[in-house]
Length: 400
Image 1: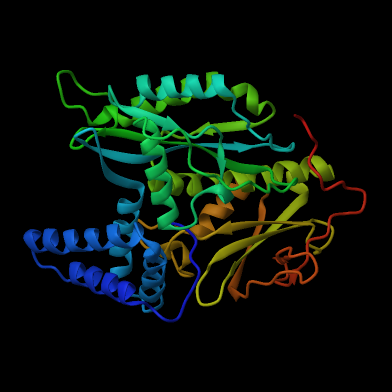
Image 2 (image 1 turned 135 degrees about the horizontal axis):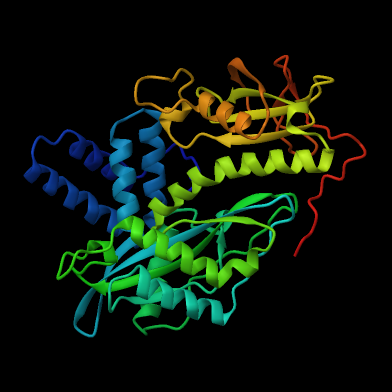
């Protein structure tokens, strides 16, 4: 979900949203669910269509701080009412959905800008219509690949993107949504690029091909994903020369963003290890890694510090952010639950680093006051500023 700025004084709109979400949590029947759900949806539509959009984030902050079960309910409804809207045009009611197709790229070189031209947009639009979307879906694609920092930062901004692109798809306006410029660090080795657009269908009609139920058996999500990945690679592969790329299937915005969040973390870790071995001329079996949880009250992220076999100084580090409450729990391993520690250790050993140490406790989120670099653990549990040997040039090689 979008980043939120905290505020301590909820408005009347925020309090109303909190009360409606709580009422839905305590509902005891489907008719009551529908009743409270409609009231909550109407309240969200009103808030997100006016200057009261920040009230949604304020309500979520309050619910999160109080650990209320209504938090998850309000998040789910806020996502639904910001990434999808109803609008009327020429006597017809349409439903518009913000659709995103993430491309996950990693390299030991410098990442490319991934710049699209008019031919790319035309080909990608045609591919979406033939391989992913239902027939007769109207579509407006943003004319560039979007990076994480350029994504909407609030539910109201998401809704504004949908409104603008939906009107573009229906021929009501020409301008695409305004996208903020990206400031991409030169040393970034893995990132997600989002192909984004709005699909518009008559209200009640399906958006994706896998929703079809007649006359023949519809394609499955897996079939659509495979067709998309193959077709997309054929169109944009040349833009990512020197990179490994995963093409995630187009989905609704928040669902696809979560998939990208999940998918980019192991690629970031893998690219860091690959670059470190190449730049420092250190084979994986000469490296060691220490993992520690960092945060205020729970594990907001896990930091991995890399040392050589010869000493305990941290030469490099990598951050693995927690994406949900389960990952933020320090004690894990219950049946059916993914253990973050085991996941990280397995990825490190897969990359050839066998000496992996899990450090107990919760460390504060410390950063260098001068340059803002995170501190990472060494094998003794000490948090250090990473320092590469002097003979190593930290800048990735520019391939493009």
